[in-house]
Each structure stands twice: as structure tokens, then as C-alpha cells.
Length: 342
Image 1 (cartoon, rainbow, N blue to C red):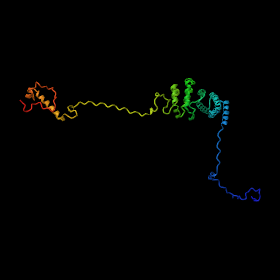
Image 2 (cartoon, rainbow, N blue to C red):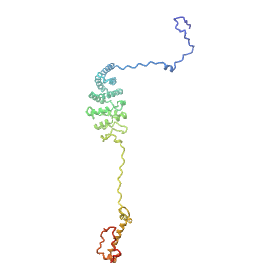
Image 3 (cartoon, rainbow, N blue to C red):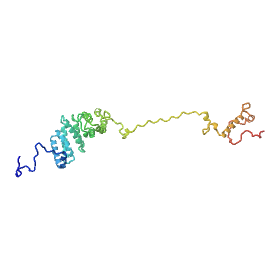
Image 4 (cartoon, rainbow, N blue to C red):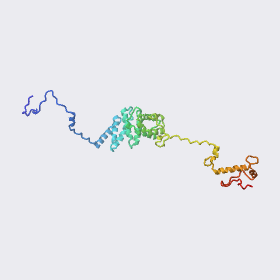
């Protein structure tokens, strides 16, 4: 194509050269694309409380007009985040009562509707006020023949001990009857049995209180614990101290030592000295006393007996074998001294 550089109506740039036929311009590399500055996204503006309130009030109004719709239950759960708003709370309380009572009349709720109802009841149990209304709605949903049961699993975040505690309250003040509402209690126990082990163990004390205060073995035996395979047991030692089960076993007491058999003393021991030395090792003073005793016995012997002497026979009448050896060891012998004999 011919171009005229002097023609102001010619759109072709005279400095631009045409690329040769069959030649394509190189594509932009990732490095070049990253080098290009990117404008940061504008931060999201915080929600307008007045606008949120207006949307919530409109949604609650719709729920009140269509209480049996599944969307009404889902909407109530979404608006529950604004329950602290003083303008939203009264309408939410009035709407939730109408919706739950209407859903309780639905003959066959879908699994999705049942899941939304479980979340809604969990939110109701978080209320610190309107307890009478909460008890009424929980009892109405419990009596529905398709509520709870083993076929309805619940996310772990909504497997809460407050369900078990509130059931005990309903049984305590006769809002539920242990005999007339037996089927509802069995379904509830089957539903609790689907909880994960951690949440079941968290609710164990409340379950034990139910089994103890409202005996119904066909109900509470449906709840199994991994370590037991049965219903929560009744603990007889309710007042035991924490940690008693962790105490190490005490070793058996050592039997007391039996006294040794008495040993009769030997003749050598009977005649030992007080310090334990045998008689043969007695002191010289003791040996002198024994000599005197033998001499007295010889003096007192009768004539003709072995060991008798003339002096002993003459003085035998005045002597006594029973006389004590009272004299000191230093005194002289009883025999006459040499030179004094008559």
C-alpha cells in the first residue's frame, strides 16, 4: 500500500516500518509482566450497620410470612449474628418461634432442613433470656418423629454439651416425660452416639447425670464410648479426689520378722562370766573362792568318806554347807597357820 507522508489524512506513521511477512512480534515474558506496576485493589469498605439492619429486618419479615420454608430456617441462622442489635432481637425472637412451630408440623423434613434446624436449636441454646420459649421449641422439635436419630450427622462445632444439659432440664420439670416421650429420647441418644469421641467425652458428666437421675437403660445404653463399648457407667466414688486413678500401686507390705526360736543355753554359756568370758578365764579372786568352797566341803565330810580330814571331822558339827562366802578375797585361808597348831 502506498502512503503519502504529506497527506494529513494518512493514518500510517511515516517512521513506522512494516514487519516482514511471516514475522511475529515476541510475546511478553513473565518477568516483564511482573515488572509492570499493578494498582492495589481498593480496601473493602466496612458494612454500614444501618444498611445491615434494614436488610435483616426485611429478611425476618419474609420468614414470618413463609415460616414452613427451608429458606426461612437458613435465614434465621444468618441473621443470628445480629441478635445483639436491639432493633433486630425482638423481631428475631418472634419469628423464630413461628418458624420452629411450623417446621415441627412438616411431615418429612429434608436432610438439609434437618441440618438447618440443628444449627438453629444450637443458636437458641446460646440465648441467656427467653428460656421458657427455648424449652418449648426444643421439646416441640424433639417430639417430631423425624428429628435427630442416627441418620442425621452434625458438624463437630454443633455437637455441644448444652443439648444434653437442656434435655435434663426438660425431664427435670416434666416438660418431657420419661415414658411418653421414650421414642424421642431414643432418637436423641442415637444422635449423640454419632458425635465424635472428643465431644462425647466432654458431655460425659451430663450423660452420667441423666442416666443416674432418669434411669432408662434402653435409652442411655445407646451411647457408646470408645474405651467402654457401652453406656456411661455410674461412678460410685463421686466424691473421690481428682487424680486418684493416677496414683501408682503401693507395694505389698513386708511381713514382720518372726522372732527367732529360743535357744537353750549350753553348759559353757551357763557358767560364763557376766562379760561373756568362759569360766576357765575367771579372775584369780574367783578361783580362790572356789578353793575355799572345796575345802569347806572336805572339812564337812563324814569320817570314812573320801576327802575327810581329822580337823574336818572334829569341826563338822559346827560347820554348815549353806554358809555364805562373805569374807573378802584378801583375808587368809581358814586352815591353821603353820606354827599355831596345837
